[in-house]
Image 1 (tube, rainbow, N blue to C red):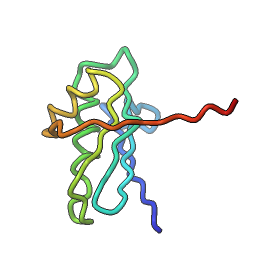
Image 2: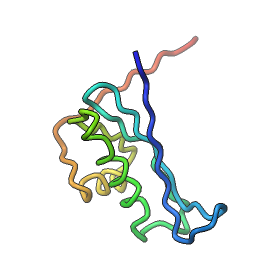
Image 3: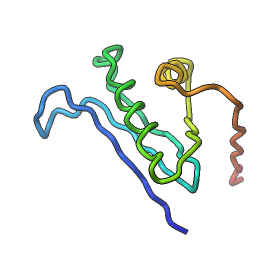
Length: 100
């Protein structure tokens, strides 16, 4: 089994210390999960999250990825996914185990 991870960051100024957002895509077979996409609060609503999402969501068709599975923690994240062309086709149920 091979686990591959892609990361994207967006920098409005070309300096090593000025990354203003980041995210990860984890392709597994024909599906790629988008997760951990974030932009600091003071820099939001400038298209940075959209740029990162677009880069991650469209990064792997040459590797056979046909389905992108975004993990939206809120409506704002879901609206970004829709903005870059992803469509709602279902929901996921995540189970957690209680250690106690």
